[in-house]
Figure 1 (cartoon, rainbow, N blue to C red):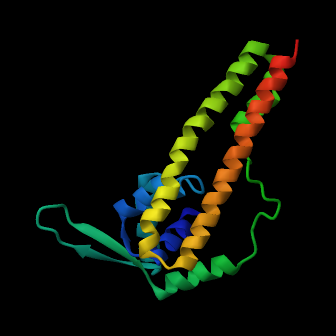
Figure 2 (tube, rainbow, N blue to C red):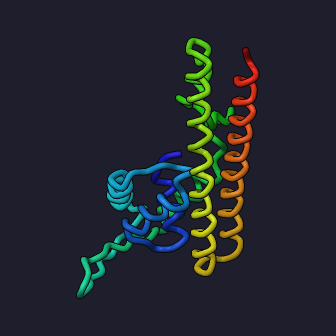
Figure 3 (cartoon, helix red, strand yellow):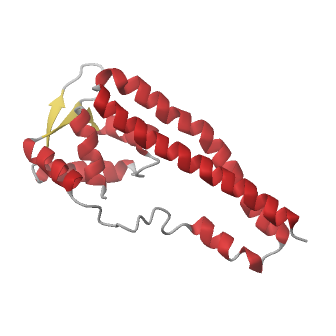
Length: 184
């Protein structure tokens, strides 16, 4: 998937400014697709040139002017075509290029203390992220009033996926710590 489909799907939900899209990616979509602010704005410009989006400049008196993006019929057709296409990566390489697991794989070349430090750092990161994941549920609940229930249900399904994966990783690292600690 590329960023453009994440943006199309979000704008199909409701028209938004680049700032609102950036906030949406940082608050609720970050666990699915990471995007920097500059990537978002760059992609919006390309998609507008391709006719997938239109933008309207909204003049404001006391604040900077805003540019609100809306999906076009061409953009909606592109989104629906992408949604109906088979998955490009049927193997489901969800953790491809996971530098942490690569480090764990070769941790046997280091000391037990060093390996435990690595595992404990992973555990701390996931414990901190557990608190941050609450913001995804809050964002869905906040936006639920603006969306029909069926659309919201799918956002909740993706959030559930993230929560389960997160819990599985946390469970794994806690077991890994016990295993390494039990080694002589």
